[in-house]
Structures are given as C-alpha cells and as structure tokens.
Image 1 (cartoon, rainbow, N blue to C red):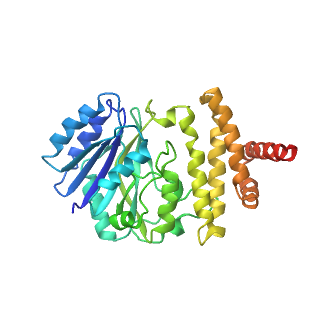
Image 2 (tube, rainbow, N blue to C red; image 1 turned 90 degrees about the horizontal axis):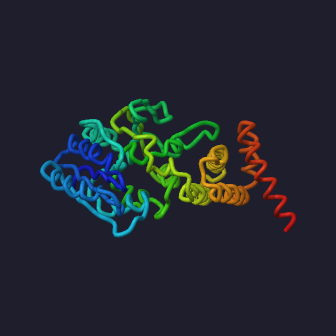
Image 3 (cartoon, helix red, strand yellow; image 1 turned 30 degrees about the horizontal axis):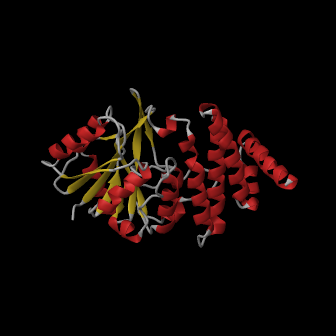
Length: 328
C-alpha cells in the first residue's frame, strides 16, 4: 500500500499543467502514488500528461486515467478515489501547484496526529500577487471533533473553508463512504462534501503548513464563467440542507447551513451582471424556489441576523415567492 495517494484532475489546462506536474516531481517519493485524471480535455493536456506519467514513474508510482467524456471536477475526483490505494489521500487541481517537500510534511502531520483528516492553510496566487488564506480555526496541531468546528453560525468556520485539496484524509474515511463527491456537480462540489466530512468523521486537526498554491483568476475556471453550470451551487446547497436536516443534531446545525446558503445566494444575486441574461433570470427563479424549500422558521432567523443589503435581496425574493403562491 502506498503511504499517500495524490488525486489530480485535469481539464483543458495545457498552459498550467507543466507547473503542476513539475511540482509533483519535486514532491515525489517511491511511497507516493500520483493519480492523474484527464477529464476528456480537448487541448494538448492529454499529451502533456502521457509524457509526464512516463517521466514521473521513475520517481513515484503513477496512474494516468483518461475519461471518454467530460464529467466535471467532482466526477474526475471520484475516478481518482476509486483508483487510489494509499493509506492517506489528498487532492490537487490541475492548474495549481505544490511547494517542494510539502507532501512529506503532510504525511508526517497525519502520522503524528493519528486523526481522520487534517486541514492546512494555502497560498492564493493571482498573477504575480500572493496572499495567505488560513483555515478559520485558531487551534493548531491538536485533534478534536469535526462537529465542533461547524459552528458558530454567525462567523466563518471550518465548513466555509471548502477546499478539498487543503489537507489529507485517512483511508478509513474512504472505506466509510465519506470521501466521494456528488457526481456531476459543476460548481460548489466541495460544499456537500465538506459538510459530510465534518458530520461523519470522528477527529481532525488543523496544521500550519503552507504548501498548496491555488491559482486564482484562471479564464477557463467555472468561477470566471457566467454560464448555467454556475447554478449547480443550488443543487449543492440543497443537498447540504437535506442531509443536515436528517442529522441527529439538526436543530443545532441547520441554522448554520441555512445562513450559509442565504449568503451564497445573495452573493450571486449581487454579481448577476456577469451571467448571461437567460442564466441571470434562471438564477433569480431558482433562488426563489430554493428559499421556498428552506425551513421557514430557520430562514426567518437567518434573515434577521444578516446585514441589511443581503437581507433585503433575499426578502424581496421571499415576498415574490409568497405572492406567487397566494395568486396560484
């Protein structure tokens, strides 16, 4: 069994893949397994990966898998999870990169702490600018309950730091069925995943490692594209609400889930100019329907606690839903 499996999905990233692959070579170890998943790229990415898989096989275990059709990031990660054999697992996106030696430090942290998973800080890279993004938890190098890190509702917590690649995960979570993503989600795929991870894992820790470089502002990234795929955030958060409502501590956890959902809807409504007109209309109608599906008592409390601008946007949608329902 390899000590660590690194799952790296790629899709049309010929410009960035060489940097990603070079960083893997600088982290290579015979005890590490690199799983390169091409999600049916249409550019030169597959050729780059084929050459890299051959070169990397001299210094690490490598598997190259190519999808026959594009399935999205969540599906590509699941392909990697199904193939992974490591005791520990981690992720890297195909346009990001790692600092030399980072993976060895990550494995050492998992060995030392013995918990189900660890979370790490990361560096955001926008053109030549660099900034550090930290896990919103002060306790470091100490294992504790992931459930305790979901709350409080009124501030950013561990479930809001929804980056699957910012950490490592013990294989027992994979065998328990916790690590797979919702197939087909085109955006916000980390959100149901991070909530499930914090509800179902038994222990985790935050470690002060800075080794993942997250590339912001990539033109091909879905965060930069205003098409209908962006609206998958509604499907993702519907899943968060549904699963949290079925949890044994639903009364305690649902306010955080609803408040986060509301904040994300308000964010997209504030930036609807970047969407195509038809998609913007769909955003408004789907958001109104999402508000109707939320537990209304919890929703009322969430709106009371939000700032006036975001609350006003959501209240207008809610009134539209109520008026439409009454007219019907």
